[in-house]
Image 1 (spheres, rainbow, N blue to C red):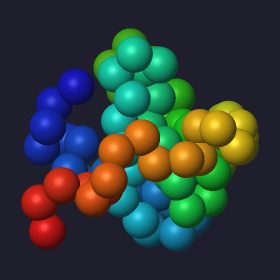
Image 2: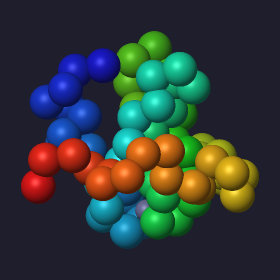
Image 3: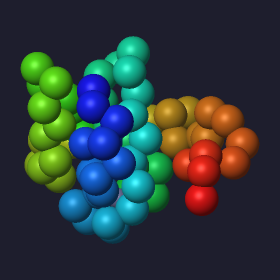
Length: 69
Ligand SMILES: [Zn+2]
């Protein structure tokens, strides 16, 4: 997915940054514990379409999330 597009995307609920999971093909909000699907390269930013993440998925996969400030 386009990096610039990705940078523009925020969670519709908390307006927080989303983390793109390339393997799962979804955008995750760790604040709300929701994963938004990406269909045909188009992010579906609808809370009713989002999947509730499991407890394990909510754990940060790497320290210093977000990368550059
Ligand atoms: Zn959120």
